[in-house]
Image (cartoon, rainbow, N blue to C red; front, side, top):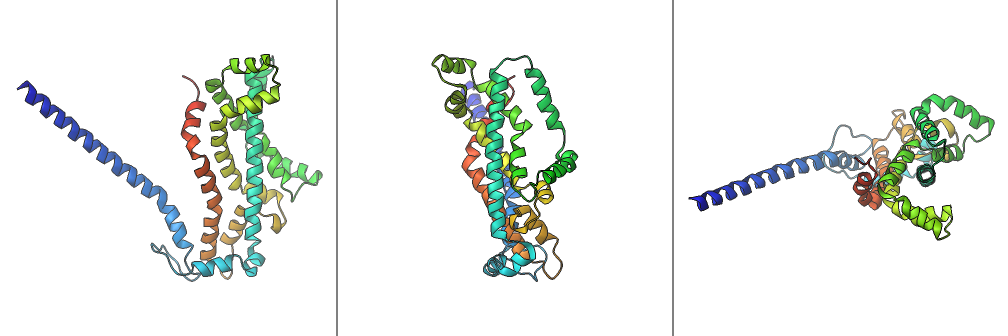
Length: 293
């Protein structure tokens, strides 16, 4: 009786585990479907003709025509240089992301390794900067850029991005959980300078955190509409969000749904590529960069 009871119990446990797995897989498949549905509709809409309206679930035959119209001279006259906008966004997003991540990590390294009297004040000041929204300082920033004659330039979109308080706090928390101070002290004993210590010893340890923040900052700068709209006036220097906004607000004559969605497809491709290249570091970076309990 005891043996048969154990067999029945094991069989019931396996059945219960199988049911839970099936439910989990069904839920995951549903979530994947919900996540990929907007991208599917986006690609489908890129094959639509200008005259078509409503939701379509299957591709059409206007993709090649939309591609030609997107890079035609008439589109450039109506909305701007779509190819140059992709290049402009790539330059701004890459430079701003690299500089903000590197210098934020360098600042976090300084406040984590060095014990000076004003360290807490520096942390509080950085936190205060993080609490000030961009829109609140936009007018003063714009007037300053006018006085410095830096409007219609990429410099105001790249250099101010170095001051990134959220990245600073993420990097500092990551260092607290994964960077022993003994490593830095050992490098100093061996005669290694501070910048060399950071670049050759600390930076490889921070590689997962770098990857995570590169993804977030690249996407944020790539999708940034407010500051480019405020600073850039030359259509040849327009970024992708400015071109998409011009297409979306076009009149009934110029508006073309097909090329609008096709350009959206092209606009998300760099983001997808960056995510695929660096996504393996996301979970590990967030887990190690979290506050230790």
